[in-house]
Structures are given as structure tokens and as C-alpha cells.
Amino acid sequence: MEAFPIAPASSRSLWFFIPIAIVLLAAAGMLVMSALGPTRARVELSPAGLSFRGDIYGRRLIPASELRGGLARIVDLGREPDLAPSWRTFGTGLPGYRSGWFRLKNGEKALVSLTDTHRVVYVPTGLGYALLVSPAQPDSFLAAIRRVAPAT
Image (cartoon, rainbow, N blue to C red; front, side, top):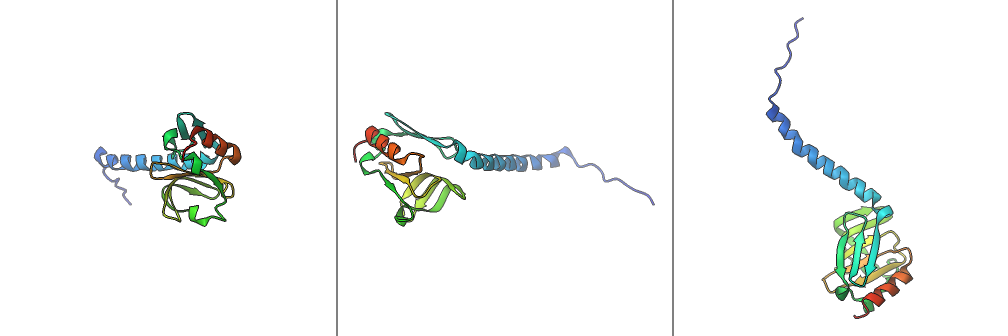
């Protein structure tokens, strides 16, 4: 028996795999960030406005002038299903954690950061979307929103 090795491919064929490797690495990075999101996510509120931090769907600053603090309220999504996220447009939907852009059952667009659906703070904005957040202390967060942006 005689064995004949295959002629080596040109280095040009390796360039085909570089974009695939980049896409796979980016996807793996997004999965890791999404998995770490519930442990790192937070909402920062200042007189300038509100920021979502800690996951890939954060927002730098939603100006206080655009927050409708007078209309903000604590909701239980089980009792008010119209405000529940139903269609994920760009976000993470893991068991016990939803983050990113969603359409609510009532058709409204929302930026969501939810870990608990029973004590959610709903904050309408003047930017064409609402915020749904489940902070550890919803009553304190709601009071702070109303201090920063008291107008409706």
C-alpha cells in the first residue's frame, strides 16, 4: 500500500474562517454578558436622569425631563397583563431575567430590566417608550423617580 498526502491548501482558504470565528466569538461574548446581566444590572437615578447599567442593553441617560414620574407606578404584571412584555424585539429573555427592548401586550414599546414580575415599576417617558424595572426596593425607587421627575 502507498499513501499520498493531499497537497496543502493555499492560505487564502483560511481567510474564510476568520469572519466565522469573529461572529462566533461575538455571539459567545453576548451569551456571557446576558448570563451575567442579572447579577450586574442596576438603575442609576440622578437629577440629570436615569441610566441602565451592567448589561448590554443599558442606556447611558434618559433625561429627567423625559421621565413621566407623576404617571409612574408599581404594578404586578400578573394582575395587569397589558403591561407584560410579550414580544422581544432586541433583548435577553432568560428564565427569571428579561432585559432589553420589548413590545408590551398593549402594543407599547418598553425598555425592560425585570427579575421579579410582581413588584415592577412602570415609568412612561416622553420618548415613545416606557420603562419596566424590578428594583430591589420598588417603593424607594418610585419615590426617587417622583422626586427627580415629578411632572406627568
